[in-house]
Length: 294
Image (cartoon, rainbow, N blue to C red; front, top):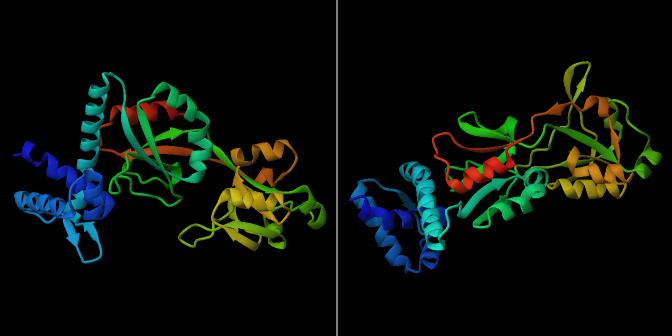
């Protein structure tokens, strides 16, 4: 029975990932009705509804989500094995889907990406940049990269990259015109270039003062949803911005930015690669984890 279900299972996973019978049909080379019939037959064979269908959308049911969480890595491993066999190679191959923040891409992935590509030429990285915290298992990703402090405890987390510290920065021209804040509390008198997440939440600037954590923000002059845009605005003299230190190291070295409040900016845990604890590592994912492990 299991062998006869491999094709319908693959089609179900495609529909669940794309949220569309039509899109799944295009990817699979089948008509939407053929895909729908295959998934319906699978539901009948298993005795459970896997997809919730409306006139406008398709989404997995809770039972479908549970199946997909275990099915997706198994299908990926089968695909990887077929690709490796077809290419006559005995090394990691196939597509590796990783969800990560923009900062993680800049700080962790990009500096060692050329070396990874050279070492594993048969692995195709599908990198989705997203600053939200993503459930990689339910959304069909092999792994994610986020700050370790934000990763759920039920995930395997492998440290990737060094500890980090925030850099509060402004241009020399801004500081000459407006003065230099010497304590976190003095930020309130300055123009701030603040970071707004996709959820609408403003990023909190956290400091240490007298051994205690302190949250302080300048008066918002503008809000951006991208760290680089905030740094560019600071370079233009529009106010004080925040970034992770590696993201502004070049501008600081060149004197185009000045780092502020260094005595109040403690280190914190850096990024981690995370994936479900019960997931067996595919060779491609193991190669990725080992390459970026700190």
